[in-house]
Image 1 (cartoon, rainbow, N blue to C red):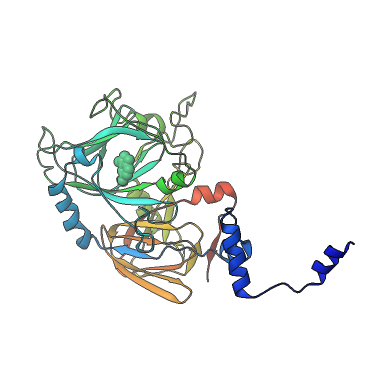
Image 2: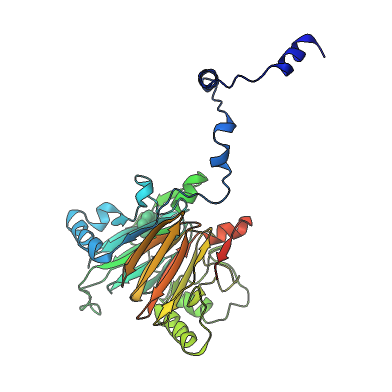
Amino acid sequence: MDMTTATLAQQQPNSDSAARKAFYDAIAVHSLTPLWEVLHALVPTSPNTPCVPAFWKYADVHPYLMQSGELITAEEAVRRVLILENPALRGRSCITQSLYAGLQVILPGEIAPSHRHTQSALRFVVEGSGAYTAVDGERTEMKPGDFIITPSWTWHDHGHQGGQPGYLDSDAPVVWLDGLDIPMLQFFDAGFAENGNAKSQAVTKAQGISSARYGANMLPMRYDAPFGQTSPIFSYPYERTREALHELETHADIDAWDGVKLRYVNPATGGSPMPTMATFMQRLPAGFSGKPYRQTDGAVFSVVEGTGSVTIERNGQISTFEFGPRDHFVIPSWHTAQLHSAQGCVLFSFSDRPVHQALGIHKEERVS
Ligand code: GTQ
């Protein structure tokens, strides 16, 4: 040991805060920063999301959706959407750190022009009839409660046929919830997009062909995975989901946390419909008082039918939202949630669970 090392080893560290501050300032010039000041925040003892629980009552949001229709056309806006922005993450266009949600409005006669992007999208139809979405040459009707997918990098446009033959009664705006993995792709810096050269893409397939080919609990003899890891079924009609949940509520055990809850699947894999987002539909029977649970995947809810309430707790902070049809709310990561319904209700939800599962970091805790 030479003298210099010996001297250094024996010295007490200079814990003077002014000395440390001077040191931090000196290293900052070299794009360096001390881990020890941020270690606890970087590696928390449990998930410590900046997101907060939030609630969007449809009666409050609806007038603004309609006003947006007076301010801008779907064509000029490209997508006329009011983003559901987490109140703790204003300016970041996201509802959780990894998910985007918004309410899109289309008026009779309008077209939201064709484009494609690497972000995956889900549509959950909130109200109205007469609209369609087109994906990869096939159109599907949008009816309330339907869950529809736009796979990554597929051309898609939306239109409202109200006023046209066969759609004379559909004179009201159609509103749906958009759920996209925008923040995730932003995080990975992996977003690409292109505009189509026609407002509406050419219809090249019969309506219902995907559902016949992939959605009848059967698959083609030589399955071709037309959308890669994404489900080949791009519309999951509410009619069938509702019927399944109703049967289960009547004839099967009710889960003490979830009521009757099913997950949507990619029929070819049994996995989630999209690689980045899982979707769920659940029915809470009348008189349901759910037990508390928490999970690492923050989840966005759209109320389909009925009424109820959700209590969300984290570190002693409690929020309670009384919900009814077309209301939306978010339960952030690792917040303890409890669902209640006196009357009975149906809830759609989506989260980034498949990503947690792919990374082996998904965690769920069900409190008895
Ligand atoms: O419908 O393609 O809410 O590209 C945000 C981005 C909807 C869409 C959104 C989009 C879309």
